[in-house]
Length: 236
Image (cartoon, rainbow, N blue to C red; front, side, top):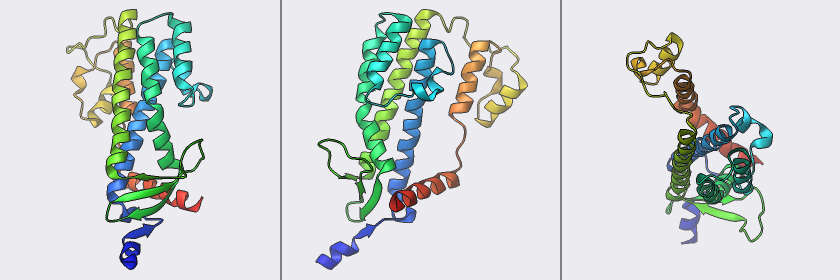
């Protein structure tokens, strides 16, 4: 019986040992990147500084982010109805951020084949927190779903702020406009018909954000990146 249990476990698993977890992990990472992009975009929108959210000093830790974002909004925009909801969303994001950090910075130590569960030794110690955590494909996917849901809500709240401020006035799509050639080529690569791209500065900026945010990812690059992450965690 003990021999069977040992045989069902893989210590320091390789990429090919955990394909289902690898796919879920990559979905989580991409969802987290989308969430962080929404946070930076919100910061830049509030300050009307496109570079604000990309400055290292403004990329706040997850636990400090709700308070600092609320303070920034109050300083720049005063008392607005969206502030409370934004602060709550950023508080809700703390738990998935912590779990994401466990998976990224922890050591993927042991994989149990029968339950498809990976045991991760955490890379940092927190008060009242176990040294090890267990993750399945479902649990990792739940983290990705949380990031996606929070990012979508932040996007809506930011748009509400901008619409009330009049940032998107005259930003409707003009189907008769002749698009710039360079932007049209980039959008064609994404499968977007370039005849829908207007020449208004605001719309061009939004389309450039789409190109930047949804640039294609090669599958081989994903596998190589995940493999490198697992190897790094096993070594250090």
